[in-house]
Image 1 (cartoon, helix red, strand yellow):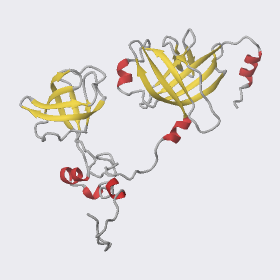
Image 2 (spheres, rainbow, N blue to C red; image 1 turned 135 degrees about the vertical axis):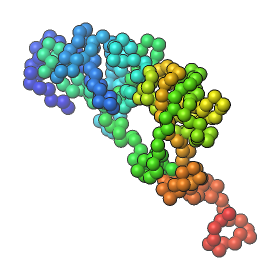
Image 3 (cartoon, rainbow, N blue to C red; image 1 turned 90 degrees about the horizontal axis):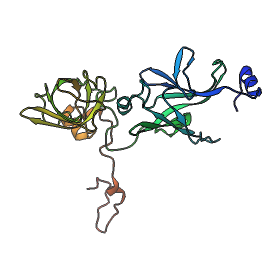
Image 4 (cartoon, one colour; image 1 turned 90 degrees about the vertical axis):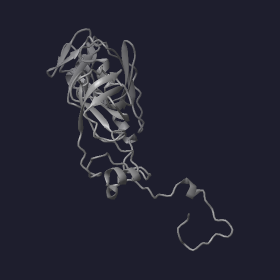
Amino acid sequence: MKTLPPDMQAHLDGGATTLCHCWILRRADGTAMGFTDHDRDIVIDGLAHEAAAGFTASAVESSSGLAVDNLDILGALISDRLSEGDLAAGMFDDAEVEIWRVNWQATEQRLLMRKGNLGEVSRGATGFSAELRGLAHRLNQPVGRLFQYACDADLGDARCGISIEAQAGIVVDCDGDRVLTASGLGAFEEGWFERGRLCFTSGANEGASMEVKLHALTPSGAVIELWQAMARGVEVGDSFEVTAGCDKQFATCRAKFSNEQNFRGFPHMPGNDFVMSYPTSGDANDGGRRN
């Protein structure tokens, strides 16, 4: 149960109200944006809440248990601060969102209604729909390690322990925004960068990154195919950095990186064939290894 500030309670008791909703969105890079369903901009604590964005919200689903509260926010891509490219590039992924009920005539009279993070964002031709998840969604996130064949460390992190240097390249040709031919990578064998990450350092996609699906060598240069097309156009002359890839298998860790001592998987864990096996007549049960 929420306790209203005395001045806001008095405003509500007056019968005629001047209330609106305000959204504050904070991206992972620290950028804060404000939006409102009022018909004019509102400034709260120095942050301008833009009315032109056209936000609308669905009903909030709430429960008394540990189920995740959620609602959908709909909006048109009208604001200069919202763009199809930024949404596609993941700049709003898991952004923090606060929803306030505000007296637009006296903005100091406000009440925090919901707080959470952006979930799934779907985009259409003229707008988008974003799911707002309550704080309880953190309880649904896996915690701890999984027993599996593959390594669960990220290549080059503290648990992996090896030093990975990003290699610089320049786009010399491109087929759309997903397949590009690059110079500067000729010293590396084919497939070296597969499952690695490519990050643009110039051009329209500067700062954006994508995982590498395919790395092949041709007479005109190294061909890099990305898993998804970049959010903005890739142009000849764009520079980037790309890191080596790892398929998380023990054989790759040993042969490609000589780092088997830090492998964070369980390559010798018995599989389903062992679980479903059973003794047969004539088997020698001497406690030794099963074939």
